[in-house]
Length: 409
Image 1 (cartoon, rainbow, N blue to C red):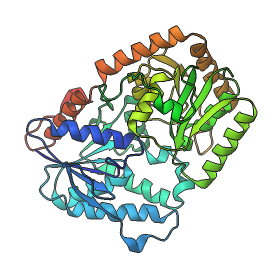
Image 2: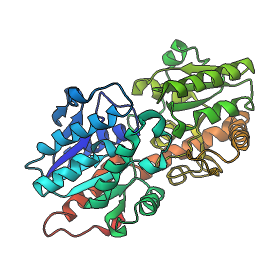
Image 3: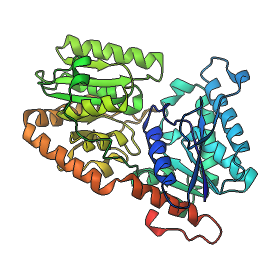
Image 4: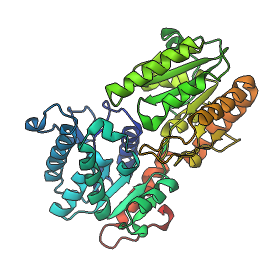
């Protein structure tokens, strides 16, 4: 079975959870008997033997405006679609590649599987980043998902969102296959060189956040919570790649206010290599995920695999990853009626986040017990090998004579 994976991100160009997902899925699919994987990726050539081709956007479309990014993405999708001949199935990830799979299906008559890592209509803040291109990205996603032969939702919550946002999608075409993690790569380490390099006190407790600077990740709400967090602890933010200059400035102003209030803030303004993140996670007392929208929340699995307790908002797929009171704490989240899905009561959310963080900072033995339970949960339930096998079963079900595997729904 020849599988074409179309993706914007693939190592070493990975900046989010979707890219991590494709990296490991491709590796484990390729290890299965009878599966031949060919990755079609945006950007520069990659060293991986799994990469069949890489693609650059059409230069004529580069105008420097926010909208041009969406048009450039479509140009890459057109090029990918032209090179899918010979594949038995095409599997796309995120709106960036969905249109390539849809066009490949139309041109070459091959089944299209789309994994939804998020939904454009549920990320309205992207209009700040893409301008009118946000309407283009939303169209690419809608036309592709509504026509896809199968859609993989990374959580039950994501599946419900797909069916609510796109009622034209038949429920039997949407299958839940969770994200996974490699527990051999994400595991607690003893070294502290990375902490020392970035000015983190290895002998003191700290709460930690890892993620992009985007409204979705809610890091601004964590900075609001910081003024209520135990001042003897450090707050380490590994946060970079802001969506817009405006969001970057908001973040900087919030960080300045926190420091002025006496918060021991360490802000690492870059996306670090995996090994560095693992070391930082390994020594954190608590990992905090303040997202306002999170279809799965892979970073929580990464923290749990490093035996770190998690405090996270109870949104989307996070509730399927973090077990409240067992691997960490879930904080209630109620969305406002604004266009961005902001918290209805931001100060209440900040207080609630801080309260749960403080419980763990005050009781290191509890934090350690929750962290150990998180590691066990990762190992037992989120293996990439099992996820790849379920994904391959879904591919086969779409080929002539295939049967839909009921276990993936």
